[in-house]
Length: 263
Image 1 (cartoon, one colour):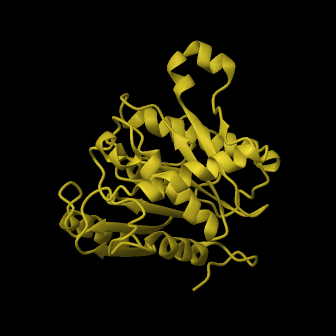
Image 2 (cartoon, helix red, strand yellow):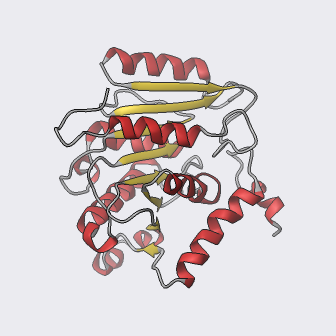
């Protein structure tokens, strides 16, 4: 299949740009050529023998600066597929450019939201267990999700990793949600949507964001004209640059050495 046809594999997505897709793929090829491991299993061999479907889950690692914090990204796809090529790997590239490490979770598709969220919880537990080996910090990490993936990120942000079968570890500093808003979410929350989104209605988004604000949650919410659902990085649209804006919000939400959050 030609790269300019890849959008046909992503029915819940729009603004799929071949150059953006190939940049994410080339980054992994370059890391492999440099001798770096890119993909990690998140379940043990015993867990995969007990439940063979778990062999489909895993984690892609996009290395940022050593000992920097990390973002974990859950792409969307209506829980029918995992749209990593459009809103996973390209996000990770841009988050690396902001000075952070990034992971893209490959969760089990076709099994519903609970199973997918359990995979994200397992991925977080894996990262915490292997932080030193991976060369990352677990302080002040963020969860990112788009559409179905945003539901996963918000669920863990609200209820914690252990609620979905993971370890009892610290929750995220920030949750970033693209074209889906959920409430309640306790961590600082950054949310975006296109004004022409026919799946995640901006009116519904605004109601949910208002509900978050009433709980005292720190929120930044942006609507972009002339884009619909699943716009990914927004390259070439009015949404271009939203990932850098989300990184800046995340940075401000991180606790300072004195334990306080930047104003």
